[in-house]
Image (cartoon, rainbow, N blue to C red; front, side, top):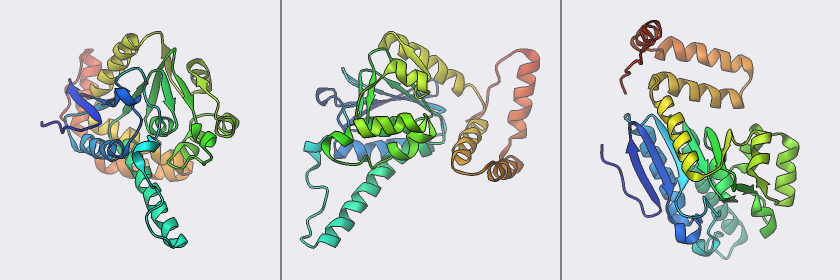
Amino acid sequence: MTIPSFETLDVSVEEQVATVHLNRPDKANAMNAAMWDELQICFEWLDEEPSVRAVILAGNGKHFCAGLDLGAFGNLEGTSSEPSRRAESQRRTILRMQGNLTAIEKCRVPVLAAIHNTCIGGGVDMTCCADMRYATEDAYFSIREIDIGMTADVGTLQRLPKIIPDGVVRELAYTGRNMGAEEARNVGFVNRVFESRDTMKREVTAIAKEIASKSPLAMRGSKEMLLYSRDHSVAEGLNYIATWNSGMMSQADLQLGVQAQMNKTQAEYED
């Protein structure tokens, strides 16, 4: 396995668990153009790499992510002087950025976000794409776009209402206020809150390794079903899982799992 190198990300793989660190610590991990593109490239690689069974998304430095690096993006509207062409160019830019982050959600292995200190704007968009979120006591979240006169447009307003109560989302989106780690846990945005980054790293890594020990094919099916069921009716979800398991439930993995349960051992599954 050859791990790709990136300008704005630090990627490592150990015991079938990949760790992706946002790596612009001197800029509070603000998301410049290179980071947006590299996030998609990275998670598409992780999606394709069979030896990776879980991913931890974290940040280097003092902050997890300070959101969009406005200074590094320049003109988002394009160069045309004609209003409709300029608007169409901006729409294409927004759709591309949405796709950059959707790659995190579409990655077929579980993604665990480990968040410390600052997580605002694009950082919230990013973590909404993860399967689970964990935070340190000093972490806070803010839909900060409203404070710069824009509507958040790359995923928070679409995904967050599927995670936490609608009224809470509206309050956060309309006010731009900070939501602390404890509140985030209480409303269901984060699974657990830890007293320090070291503790969070140890505990989240343990969860990721437990996930990595399961049948990777069964894990991919579970993620596929949960995402599909989020956006479809119960009847449609039931039909899909019947079709999926009819074609992709591994009899070899099933036998290994049953034997391991009977013998109280750990099954060793093929990547």
